[in-house]
Image 1 (tube, rainbow, N blue to C red):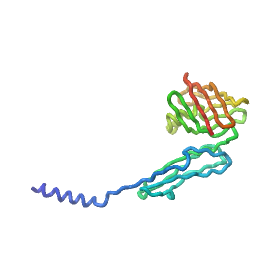
Image 2: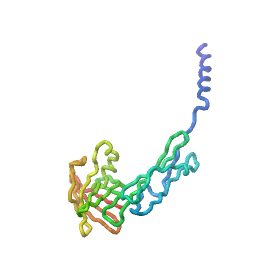
Image 3: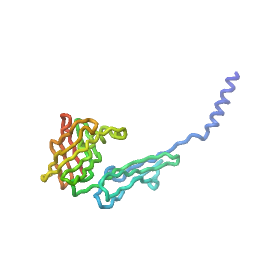
Image 4: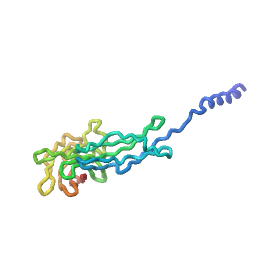
Length: 222
């Protein structure tokens, strides 16, 4: 009898203590204006298309905070992050990558597309730098296949999946391999150029590679 009488009292106290304490928090939903991967020529001005944000059905685009900037005087890749923090302190975010490219030169920033076997990856940040001696250094001849495609983020743990290589652009716009150090990357095997061509009109590079006895295809675009 005592247990039976106590039960509703305990339940009543519990309900009263939790009354008004449950709530719903709404996160912002962000949608980029424009593309997630953009290019802009070096030396020109870049206009950020921005980001639209809604929260609980309302437009809160005026609350978007932009983190990062684009230096169009320096060729390379820049990341812009867009963030909205709700009233409970929870953040929602989106990001965009902007490549500052040189449309008139072989040395530039490129977006890398790579295919090896059945795997196909896009939008890897690849740079080609002029060595001043008729050769160029490409940051990853594999087009980011491993570093940004199959195993992204592993460089933070000491894994090197980018194979930096020295290449040469011939007068007929064909590309040949000059030097590389395969022992410096994770697989410790060379990647040879079977065919390579640069189209100065479109700023596109196409590489037919040989790696571990199988073909690999890389396309670099500005």
